[in-house]
Amino acid sequence: MTSPNYKICCIGAGYVGGPTMAMIAHKSPETQVTCVDINAERIAAWNSDDLPVFEPGLFEIVAQQRGKNLHFSTEVDKAIEEADIIFISVNTPTKTYGLGAGRAADLKYIEKCARRIAEVAKTDKVVVEKSTLPVRTAEAIKRILSTANNGANFQIISNPEFLAEGTAVADLENPDRVLIGGERTPEGEAAIQKVVDIYASWVPGERIITTNLWSSELSKLTANAFLAQRISSINAISALCEATEADVDEVAHAIGTDSRIGPKFLKASVGFGGSCFQKDILNLVYLCEHFGLPEVAEYWAQVVKMNDYQKRRFARKIVQTLFNTVSGKRIALLGYAFKKDTNDTRETAAYYVAKELLEEQADLAIYDPRVEHDKIRSELGIDDRSTNVEICTDAYTACKDAHAVAVITEWDEFKTLDYQKIHDHMLKPAFIFDGRNIIDLGKLREMGFEAHGIGKG
Ligand code: UDX
Ligand code: UDX
Image (cartoon, rainbow, N blue to C red; front, side, top):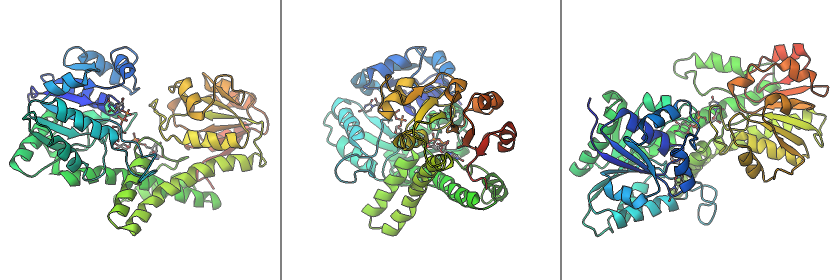
Protein backbone atom coordinates (compact mmCIF):
# COMPACT_ATOMS: atom_id res chain seq x y z
CA MET A 1 0.00 0.00 0.00
CA THR A 2 1.44 3.40 -0.93
CA SER A 3 1.10 6.10 1.66
CA PRO A 4 -1.19 9.08 1.04
CA ASN A 5 0.45 12.47 0.43
CA TYR A 6 -1.65 14.37 2.95
CA LYS A 7 -0.51 17.24 5.10
CA ILE A 8 -1.29 16.44 8.71
CA CYS A 9 -1.09 18.66 11.74
CA CYS A 10 -1.47 17.54 15.33
CA ILE A 11 -2.27 20.06 18.07
CA GLY A 12 -0.76 18.78 21.34
CA ALA A 13 2.68 17.14 21.38
CA GLY A 14 2.20 15.10 24.56
CA TYR A 15 2.41 11.41 25.45
CA VAL A 16 -0.24 10.60 22.84
CA GLY A 17 0.24 13.21 20.09
CA GLY A 18 4.05 12.94 19.89
CA PRO A 19 4.44 9.15 19.53
CA THR A 20 1.36 8.79 17.29
CA MET A 21 2.55 11.42 14.83
CA ALA A 22 6.07 9.98 14.85
CA MET A 23 4.64 6.57 13.89
CA ILE A 24 2.47 8.03 11.11
CA ALA A 25 5.50 9.86 9.69
CA HIS A 26 7.58 6.70 9.99
CA LYS A 27 5.07 4.42 8.28
CA SER A 28 3.78 6.88 5.74
CA PRO A 29 6.76 8.63 4.13
CA GLU A 30 4.68 10.61 1.64
CA THR A 31 2.65 12.20 4.44
CA GLN A 32 3.92 15.49 5.87
CA VAL A 33 3.35 15.62 9.62
CA THR A 34 3.66 18.72 11.81
CA CYS A 35 3.16 18.44 15.54
CA VAL A 36 2.45 21.74 17.27
CA ASP A 37 2.17 22.70 20.91
CA ILE A 38 1.75 25.92 22.84
CA ASN A 39 4.48 24.76 25.19
CA ALA A 40 7.72 26.00 23.60
CA GLU A 41 9.91 24.06 26.02
CA ARG A 42 8.22 20.81 25.01
CA ILE A 43 8.67 21.55 21.33
CA ALA A 44 12.35 22.36 21.90
CA ALA A 45 12.71 19.01 23.66
CA TRP A 46 11.04 17.16 20.75
CA ASN A 47 13.62 18.84 18.50
CA SER A 48 16.52 17.78 20.74
CA ASP A 49 18.21 14.50 21.70
CA ASP A 50 16.35 14.51 25.01
CA LEU A 51 12.70 13.89 24.09
CA PRO A 52 10.06 15.03 26.61
CA VAL A 53 8.48 11.57 26.55
CA PHE A 54 10.41 8.43 27.39
CA GLU A 55 9.19 5.41 25.41
CA PRO A 56 11.36 2.46 24.39
CA GLY A 57 12.16 2.75 20.67
CA LEU A 58 10.65 6.21 20.23
CA PHE A 59 13.84 8.19 19.89
CA GLU A 60 15.06 6.08 16.97
CA ILE A 61 11.87 6.71 15.01
CA VAL A 62 11.79 10.43 15.76
CA ALA A 63 15.46 10.84 14.86
CA GLN A 64 14.88 9.05 11.57
CA GLN A 65 11.93 11.17 10.43
CA ARG A 66 12.60 14.54 12.03
CA GLY A 67 13.30 17.26 9.47
CA LYS A 68 12.08 14.98 6.67
CA ASN A 69 8.34 14.46 7.03
CA LEU A 70 8.07 15.05 10.79
CA HIS A 71 8.27 18.54 12.24
CA PHE A 72 7.76 19.93 15.73
CA SER A 73 6.78 23.56 15.99
CA THR A 74 5.01 26.21 18.04
CA GLU A 75 3.51 27.84 14.98
CA VAL A 76 -0.01 26.58 15.53
CA ASP A 77 -1.80 28.86 13.05
CA LYS A 78 0.55 28.12 10.18
CA ALA A 79 0.22 24.37 10.72
CA ILE A 80 -3.58 24.62 10.84
CA GLU A 81 -3.67 26.65 7.66
CA GLU A 82 -1.50 24.23 5.71
CA ALA A 83 -3.03 20.95 6.89
CA ASP A 84 -5.67 18.79 5.19
CA ILE A 85 -6.21 16.80 8.36
CA ILE A 86 -5.92 18.21 11.89
CA PHE A 87 -5.60 15.89 14.89
CA ILE A 88 -6.49 17.37 18.27
CA SER A 89 -4.52 15.68 21.02
CA VAL A 90 -4.56 18.19 23.84
CA ASN A 91 -5.09 17.15 27.42
CA THR A 92 -8.57 16.85 28.89
CA PRO A 93 -8.01 16.80 32.66
CA THR A 94 -10.76 16.22 35.19
CA LYS A 95 -12.50 19.52 35.97
CA THR A 96 -11.33 21.03 39.23
CA TYR A 97 -13.96 23.76 39.43
CA GLY A 98 -17.66 24.47 38.92
CA LEU A 99 -20.25 22.08 37.55
CA GLY A 100 -19.00 18.48 37.47
CA ALA A 101 -15.83 19.32 39.45
CA GLY A 102 -13.84 16.19 40.27
CA ARG A 103 -15.62 14.11 37.62
CA ALA A 104 -16.38 15.82 34.32
CA ALA A 105 -13.67 16.34 31.71
CA ASP A 106 -12.43 19.88 31.34
CA LEU A 107 -12.91 20.67 27.68
CA LYS A 108 -11.51 24.19 27.69
CA TYR A 109 -8.39 23.23 25.69
CA ILE A 110 -10.43 21.33 23.12
CA GLU A 111 -12.79 24.27 22.72
CA LYS A 112 -9.86 26.66 22.36
CA CYS A 113 -8.41 24.48 19.60
CA ALA A 114 -11.73 24.33 17.76
CA ARG A 115 -12.10 28.12 17.95
CA ARG A 116 -8.56 28.57 16.66
CA ILE A 117 -9.22 26.24 13.72
CA ALA A 118 -12.47 28.10 12.92
CA GLU A 119 -10.63 31.41 12.92
CA VAL A 120 -7.56 30.38 10.94
CA ALA A 121 -8.67 27.76 8.40
CA LYS A 122 -9.33 28.99 4.88
CA THR A 123 -9.65 25.59 3.17
CA ASP A 124 -11.66 22.44 3.95
CA LYS A 125 -10.32 20.33 6.83
CA VAL A 126 -10.94 17.01 8.42
CA VAL A 127 -10.71 17.54 12.20
CA VAL A 128 -9.84 14.40 14.16
CA GLU A 129 -10.48 14.04 17.90
CA LYS A 130 -7.56 12.08 19.30
CA SER A 131 -8.06 13.15 22.90
CA THR A 132 -10.41 10.93 24.91
CA LEU A 133 -13.60 12.90 25.24
CA PRO A 134 -17.08 12.66 26.69
CA VAL A 135 -19.64 11.29 24.27
CA ARG A 136 -21.09 13.97 22.00
CA THR A 137 -18.10 16.33 22.23
CA ALA A 138 -17.84 16.10 18.45
CA GLU A 139 -21.20 17.85 18.31
CA ALA A 140 -19.80 20.80 20.28
CA ILE A 141 -16.71 20.98 18.09
CA LYS A 142 -18.91 20.89 15.01
CA ARG A 143 -21.03 23.78 16.25
CA ILE A 144 -17.97 25.89 16.97
CA LEU A 145 -16.47 25.13 13.56
CA SER A 146 -19.74 25.96 11.83
CA THR A 147 -19.35 29.55 13.02
CA ALA A 148 -16.28 29.92 10.79
CA ASN A 149 -16.82 32.33 7.95
CA ASN A 150 -13.75 31.82 5.79
CA GLY A 151 -15.66 29.57 3.42
CA ALA A 152 -14.04 26.39 4.74
CA ASN A 153 -15.99 23.17 5.41
CA PHE A 154 -15.17 20.83 8.28
CA GLN A 155 -15.74 17.16 8.93
CA ILE A 156 -15.29 15.79 12.44
CA ILE A 157 -13.82 12.35 13.03
CA SER A 158 -13.32 10.53 16.31
CA ASN A 159 -10.14 8.43 16.32
CA PRO A 160 -9.36 7.54 19.94
CA GLU A 161 -5.88 6.25 20.74
CA PHE A 162 -5.53 2.94 22.57
CA LEU A 163 -1.76 2.88 23.07
CA ALA A 164 -0.49 2.17 26.57
CA GLU A 165 2.49 4.10 27.88
CA GLY A 166 5.73 2.16 28.09
CA THR A 167 4.71 0.11 25.03
CA ALA A 168 3.57 3.02 22.82
CA VAL A 169 5.82 2.21 19.87
CA ALA A 170 4.84 -1.48 19.75
CA ASP A 171 1.16 -0.64 20.28
CA LEU A 172 1.19 1.94 17.49
CA GLU A 173 3.09 -0.33 15.15
CA ASN A 174 0.86 -3.31 15.71
CA PRO A 175 -2.49 -2.14 17.13
CA ASP A 176 -5.28 -4.60 18.02
CA ARG A 177 -7.53 -2.20 16.18
CA VAL A 178 -7.79 1.35 14.94
CA LEU A 179 -11.16 2.93 15.58
CA ILE A 180 -12.47 5.65 13.30
CA GLY A 181 -15.89 7.19 13.89
CA GLY A 182 -17.59 9.68 11.62
CA GLU A 183 -20.90 10.89 10.31
CA ARG A 184 -22.73 8.48 8.06
CA THR A 185 -23.25 11.07 5.30
CA PRO A 186 -21.38 11.07 1.96
CA GLU A 187 -19.07 13.86 3.24
CA GLY A 188 -18.62 12.02 6.52
CA GLU A 189 -17.77 8.75 4.75
CA ALA A 190 -15.22 10.57 2.58
CA ALA A 191 -13.57 12.00 5.71
CA ILE A 192 -13.53 8.56 7.37
CA GLN A 193 -11.85 7.19 4.25
CA LYS A 194 -9.09 9.82 4.44
CA VAL A 195 -8.24 8.81 7.99
CA VAL A 196 -8.49 5.11 7.05
CA ASP A 197 -5.96 5.80 4.25
CA ILE A 198 -3.42 7.10 6.76
CA TYR A 199 -3.50 3.95 8.90
CA ALA A 200 -3.88 1.58 5.96
CA SER A 201 -0.20 2.33 5.15
CA TRP A 202 0.68 -0.24 7.82
CA VAL A 203 -2.42 -1.55 9.64
CA PRO A 204 -4.24 -4.53 8.03
CA GLY A 205 -7.69 -3.55 6.78
CA GLU A 206 -9.56 -5.95 9.06
CA ARG A 207 -8.13 -4.16 12.09
CA ILE A 208 -9.51 -0.79 11.04
CA ILE A 209 -13.00 -0.43 12.48
CA THR A 210 -15.31 2.35 11.37
CA THR A 211 -18.37 3.37 13.41
CA ASN A 212 -20.59 6.35 13.93
CA LEU A 213 -19.13 9.24 15.93
CA TRP A 214 -20.82 8.52 19.23
CA SER A 215 -19.98 4.81 19.24
CA SER A 216 -16.34 5.67 18.70
CA GLU A 217 -16.26 8.21 21.52
CA LEU A 218 -18.05 5.87 23.91
CA SER A 219 -15.88 2.86 22.95
CA LYS A 220 -12.77 4.57 24.26
CA LEU A 221 -14.30 5.33 27.65
CA THR A 222 -15.75 1.82 27.81
CA ALA A 223 -12.46 0.12 26.90
CA ASN A 224 -10.64 1.94 29.68
CA ALA A 225 -13.47 1.30 32.15
CA PHE A 226 -13.39 -2.46 31.39
CA LEU A 227 -9.60 -2.65 31.69
CA ALA A 228 -9.56 -0.76 34.97
CA GLN A 229 -12.45 -2.86 36.23
CA ARG A 230 -10.40 -6.02 35.78
CA ILE A 231 -7.61 -4.56 37.91
CA SER A 232 -10.03 -3.43 40.63
CA SER A 233 -11.68 -6.84 40.56
CA ILE A 234 -8.43 -8.73 41.08
CA ASN A 235 -7.30 -6.17 43.66
CA ALA A 236 -10.55 -6.73 45.57
CA ILE A 237 -9.79 -10.45 45.56
CA SER A 238 -6.23 -9.71 46.72
CA ALA A 239 -7.60 -8.33 49.99
CA LEU A 240 -9.56 -11.53 50.49
CA CYS A 241 -6.45 -13.60 49.68
CA GLU A 242 -4.51 -11.80 52.38
CA ALA A 243 -7.25 -12.65 54.88
CA THR A 244 -7.15 -16.33 53.88
CA GLU A 245 -4.46 -18.73 52.77
CA ALA A 246 -4.94 -18.02 49.07
CA ASP A 247 -2.39 -16.54 46.68
CA VAL A 248 -3.78 -13.93 44.27
CA ASP A 249 -1.30 -14.78 41.49
CA GLU A 250 -2.43 -18.41 41.62
CA VAL A 251 -6.06 -17.34 41.55
CA ALA A 252 -5.40 -14.97 38.61
CA HIS A 253 -3.61 -17.72 36.70
CA ALA A 254 -6.38 -20.23 37.41
CA ILE A 255 -9.18 -17.94 36.26
CA GLY A 256 -7.16 -16.44 33.39
CA THR A 257 -6.84 -19.80 31.65
CA ASP A 258 -10.60 -19.71 31.08
CA SER A 259 -10.66 -18.41 27.52
CA ARG A 260 -13.76 -16.39 28.33
CA ILE A 261 -11.82 -14.46 30.98
CA GLY A 262 -8.31 -14.41 29.48
CA PRO A 263 -4.98 -13.82 31.23
CA LYS A 264 -4.32 -10.10 30.67
CA PHE A 265 -4.88 -7.25 33.12
CA LEU A 266 -5.23 -9.59 36.07
CA LYS A 267 -2.07 -8.53 37.87
CA ALA A 268 -2.90 -7.49 41.42
CA SER A 269 -1.02 -4.34 42.39
CA VAL A 270 -0.69 -1.39 44.71
CA GLY A 271 -3.36 0.21 42.51
CA PHE A 272 -3.65 1.44 38.95
CA GLY A 273 -2.45 4.89 37.93
CA GLY A 274 -1.90 6.80 34.71
CA SER A 275 -3.59 9.73 33.08
CA CYS A 276 -6.52 7.78 31.69
CA PHE A 277 -8.21 5.14 33.82
CA GLN A 278 -9.45 7.24 36.72
CA LYS A 279 -10.21 10.26 34.56
CA ASP A 280 -12.16 8.30 31.99
CA ILE A 281 -14.19 6.36 34.55
CA LEU A 282 -15.08 9.54 36.43
CA ASN A 283 -16.08 10.97 33.12
CA LEU A 284 -18.27 7.95 32.37
CA VAL A 285 -19.84 8.27 35.82
CA TYR A 286 -20.60 11.91 35.17
CA LEU A 287 -22.14 11.12 31.79
CA CYS A 288 -24.38 8.45 33.33
CA GLU A 289 -25.55 10.87 35.99
CA HIS A 290 -26.15 13.52 33.38
CA PHE A 291 -28.33 11.13 31.40
CA GLY A 292 -30.32 10.15 34.51
CA LEU A 293 -28.74 6.74 35.09
CA PRO A 294 -27.63 6.82 38.76
CA GLU A 295 -27.39 3.01 39.13
CA VAL A 296 -25.05 2.77 36.14
CA ALA A 297 -23.01 5.68 37.48
CA GLU A 298 -22.67 4.01 40.87
CA TYR A 299 -21.64 0.72 39.30
CA TRP A 300 -18.63 2.27 37.53
CA ALA A 301 -17.74 4.62 40.38
CA GLN A 302 -16.99 1.53 42.45
CA VAL A 303 -13.99 0.71 40.23
CA VAL A 304 -12.30 3.96 41.30
CA LYS A 305 -13.32 3.52 44.94
CA MET A 306 -11.77 0.06 45.01
CA ASN A 307 -8.55 1.50 43.57
CA ASP A 308 -8.44 4.20 46.26
CA TYR A 309 -8.96 1.48 48.86
CA GLN A 310 -6.11 -0.59 47.44
CA LYS A 311 -3.60 2.29 47.52
CA ARG A 312 -4.62 3.20 51.08
CA ARG A 313 -4.59 -0.43 52.18
CA PHE A 314 -0.99 -0.84 51.00
CA ALA A 315 0.23 2.25 52.88
CA ARG A 316 -1.67 1.24 56.02
CA LYS A 317 -0.29 -2.27 55.92
CA ILE A 318 3.22 -0.81 56.03
CA VAL A 319 2.34 1.29 59.06
CA GLN A 320 0.58 -1.56 60.88
CA THR A 321 3.37 -4.04 60.20
CA LEU A 322 6.01 -1.64 61.44
CA PHE A 323 4.45 -1.86 64.92
CA ASN A 324 1.86 0.81 64.16
CA THR A 325 4.33 3.63 63.78
CA VAL A 326 6.60 4.80 61.00
CA SER A 327 7.37 8.12 62.63
CA GLY A 328 11.03 8.98 61.99
CA LYS A 329 11.59 5.63 60.23
CA ARG A 330 13.31 5.54 56.84
CA ILE A 331 11.19 3.80 54.23
CA ALA A 332 12.58 3.20 50.74
CA LEU A 333 10.13 3.51 47.85
CA LEU A 334 11.40 1.69 44.76
CA GLY A 335 9.74 3.26 41.74
CA TYR A 336 7.67 6.38 41.36
CA ALA A 337 6.30 6.18 37.78
CA PHE A 338 2.76 4.80 37.42
CA LYS A 339 4.13 1.76 35.57
CA LYS A 340 7.47 0.59 34.21
CA ASP A 341 9.15 1.94 31.07
CA THR A 342 7.67 5.43 31.33
CA ASN A 343 8.68 8.69 33.03
CA ASP A 344 5.02 9.56 33.50
CA THR A 345 3.77 10.01 37.07
CA ARG A 346 0.20 11.10 36.49
CA GLU A 347 -2.08 9.50 39.13
CA THR A 348 0.74 7.21 40.20
CA ALA A 349 0.02 5.02 43.24
CA ALA A 350 3.46 6.11 44.49
CA TYR A 351 2.14 9.60 45.18
CA TYR A 352 -0.70 8.33 47.37
CA VAL A 353 1.48 5.88 49.26
CA ALA A 354 4.14 8.57 49.81
CA LYS A 355 1.56 11.08 51.05
CA GLU A 356 0.03 8.59 53.53
CA LEU A 357 3.45 7.66 54.87
CA LEU A 358 4.52 11.31 55.15
CA GLU A 359 1.35 12.04 57.11
CA GLU A 360 2.49 9.31 59.48
CA GLN A 361 5.80 11.21 59.75
CA ALA A 362 7.92 8.64 57.94
CA ASP A 363 11.22 9.59 56.30
CA LEU A 364 11.14 8.57 52.65
CA ALA A 365 13.98 7.58 50.32
CA ILE A 366 12.66 7.43 46.76
CA TYR A 367 14.37 5.96 43.71
CA ASP A 368 13.01 5.75 40.17
CA PRO A 369 15.22 5.10 37.14
CA ARG A 370 13.40 7.54 34.82
CA VAL A 371 11.41 10.15 36.70
CA GLU A 372 13.15 13.51 37.11
CA HIS A 373 13.91 14.30 40.74
CA ASP A 374 12.37 17.77 40.53
CA LYS A 375 9.12 16.29 39.32
CA ILE A 376 8.88 14.05 42.38
CA ARG A 377 9.72 16.95 44.67
CA SER A 378 7.19 19.30 43.13
CA GLU A 379 4.43 16.68 43.21
CA LEU A 380 5.08 15.92 46.86
CA GLY A 381 5.32 19.64 47.60
CA ILE A 382 8.86 19.56 49.01
CA ASP A 383 12.08 21.34 48.11
CA ASP A 384 15.64 20.00 47.95
CA ARG A 385 16.31 21.14 51.53
CA SER A 386 13.63 18.80 52.83
CA THR A 387 15.01 16.41 55.43
CA ASN A 388 12.17 13.89 55.41
CA VAL A 389 12.32 13.01 51.71
CA GLU A 390 15.52 11.98 49.97
CA ILE A 391 15.48 11.35 46.23
CA CYS A 392 18.17 8.80 45.41
CA THR A 393 20.07 7.92 42.25
CA ASP A 394 20.13 4.17 42.86
CA ALA A 395 18.15 1.53 44.71
CA TYR A 396 20.93 0.52 47.11
CA THR A 397 21.37 4.05 48.45
CA ALA A 398 17.62 4.37 48.95
CA CYS A 399 17.46 1.10 50.90
CA LYS A 400 20.53 1.74 53.07
CA ASP A 401 19.61 2.09 56.75
CA ALA A 402 15.92 1.72 55.94
CA HIS A 403 13.41 0.02 58.21
CA ALA A 404 11.35 -1.06 55.21
CA VAL A 405 11.46 -1.25 51.43
CA ALA A 406 8.30 -0.87 49.34
CA VAL A 407 8.30 -1.79 45.64
CA ILE A 408 5.84 0.54 43.93
CA THR A 409 6.70 0.29 40.21
CA GLU A 410 7.47 -2.99 38.44
CA TRP A 411 10.72 -1.79 36.78
CA ASP A 412 12.68 -4.81 35.49
CA GLU A 413 15.80 -3.76 37.37
CA PHE A 414 14.01 -4.30 40.69
CA LYS A 415 13.62 -7.99 39.87
CA THR A 416 17.35 -8.57 39.80
CA LEU A 417 18.67 -6.38 42.63
CA ASP A 418 21.02 -8.01 45.13
CA TYR A 419 18.45 -8.26 47.91
CA GLN A 420 20.90 -9.98 50.24
CA LYS A 421 23.11 -6.89 50.04
CA ILE A 422 20.06 -4.69 50.59
CA HIS A 423 19.04 -6.75 53.63
CA ASP A 424 22.53 -6.57 55.12
CA HIS A 425 22.46 -2.76 55.06
CA MET A 426 18.97 -2.32 56.52
CA LEU A 427 17.80 -1.95 60.11
CA LYS A 428 16.41 -5.15 61.62
CA PRO A 429 13.85 -6.56 61.46
CA ALA A 430 14.08 -5.74 57.75
CA PHE A 431 10.66 -5.42 56.13
CA ILE A 432 9.87 -5.55 52.44
CA PHE A 433 6.50 -4.89 50.80
CA ASP A 434 6.26 -5.89 47.17
CA GLY A 435 3.42 -3.81 45.70
CA ARG A 436 3.83 -5.54 42.32
CA ASN A 437 4.51 -9.17 43.24
CA ILE A 438 7.71 -9.22 41.19
CA ILE A 439 10.11 -10.71 43.75
CA ASP A 440 10.06 -14.26 45.14
CA LEU A 441 8.86 -13.82 48.73
CA GLY A 442 10.21 -17.24 49.74
CA LYS A 443 13.75 -16.29 48.71
CA LEU A 444 13.46 -12.93 50.49
CA ARG A 445 12.40 -14.73 53.66
CA GLU A 446 15.37 -17.08 53.39
CA MET A 447 17.60 -13.97 53.29
CA GLY A 448 16.05 -12.84 56.55
CA PHE A 449 13.44 -10.35 55.35
CA GLU A 450 9.95 -10.14 56.75
CA ALA A 451 8.38 -10.08 53.28
CA HIS A 452 4.85 -9.15 52.23
CA GLY A 453 3.28 -9.17 48.78
CA ILE A 454 -0.12 -8.17 47.48
CA GLY A 455 -2.76 -10.87 47.99
CA LYS A 456 -0.39 -13.40 49.47
CA GLY A 457 -2.16 -15.11 52.37
C1 UDX B 1 -4.00 13.74 26.25
C2 UDX B 1 -5.26 13.47 27.08
O1 UDX B 1 -4.90 13.48 28.46
C3 UDX B 1 -5.90 12.16 26.77
O2 UDX B 1 -7.21 12.13 27.31
C4 UDX B 1 -6.06 11.98 25.32
O3 UDX B 1 -6.47 10.67 25.06
C5 UDX B 1 -4.82 12.34 24.55
O4 UDX B 1 -4.30 13.59 24.92
P1 UDX B 1 -1.47 13.20 26.66
O5 UDX B 1 -0.91 13.27 25.29
O6 UDX B 1 -0.91 12.18 27.58
O7 UDX B 1 -3.00 12.85 26.64
O8 UDX B 1 -1.46 14.66 27.31
P2 UDX B 1 -0.23 15.63 27.53
O9 UDX B 1 1.04 14.85 27.58
O10 UDX B 1 -0.60 16.53 28.65
O11 UDX B 1 -0.17 16.47 26.17
C6 UDX B 1 -1.06 17.45 25.78
C7 UDX B 1 -0.29 18.57 25.11
O12 UDX B 1 -1.21 19.51 24.55
C8 UDX B 1 0.62 19.37 26.04
O13 UDX B 1 1.94 19.31 25.58
C9 UDX B 1 0.05 20.79 25.99
O14 UDX B 1 1.04 21.80 26.07
C10 UDX B 1 -0.65 20.80 24.66
N1 UDX B 1 -1.70 21.81 24.52
C11 UDX B 1 -2.66 21.93 25.44
C12 UDX B 1 -1.70 22.66 23.40
O15 UDX B 1 -0.81 22.57 22.57
N2 UDX B 1 -2.71 23.57 23.27
C13 UDX B 1 -3.67 23.73 24.21
O16 UDX B 1 -4.55 24.57 24.06
C14 UDX B 1 -3.65 22.87 25.34
C1 UDX C 1 -4.33 2.68 29.41
C2 UDX C 1 -4.92 1.70 28.39
O1 UDX C 1 -4.28 0.42 28.55
C3 UDX C 1 -4.72 2.22 26.98
O2 UDX C 1 -5.35 1.36 26.05
C4 UDX C 1 -5.31 3.62 26.88
O3 UDX C 1 -5.09 4.16 25.60
C5 UDX C 1 -4.73 4.54 27.93
O4 UDX C 1 -4.90 3.97 29.23
P1 UDX C 1 -1.87 3.26 30.29
O5 UDX C 1 -2.57 3.98 31.38
O6 UDX C 1 -0.82 3.98 29.53
O7 UDX C 1 -2.93 2.75 29.19
O8 UDX C 1 -1.19 1.92 30.87
P2 UDX C 1 -1.76 0.49 31.32
O9 UDX C 1 -0.79 -0.53 30.89
O10 UDX C 1 -3.16 0.28 30.93
O11 UDX C 1 -1.66 0.55 32.91
C6 UDX C 1 -2.48 1.41 33.69
C7 UDX C 1 -2.25 1.12 35.17
O12 UDX C 1 -2.77 -0.14 35.54
C8 UDX C 1 -0.78 1.11 35.58
O13 UDX C 1 -0.62 1.75 36.82
C9 UDX C 1 -0.48 -0.36 35.69
O14 UDX C 1 0.59 -0.63 36.54
C10 UDX C 1 -1.79 -0.89 36.23
N1 UDX C 1 -2.03 -2.32 35.96
C11 UDX C 1 -2.12 -2.76 34.67
C12 UDX C 1 -2.21 -3.20 37.03
O15 UDX C 1 -2.15 -2.80 38.20
N2 UDX C 1 -2.47 -4.51 36.76
C13 UDX C 1 -2.57 -5.00 35.48
O16 UDX C 1 -2.84 -6.21 35.33
C14 UDX C 1 -2.39 -4.08 34.41
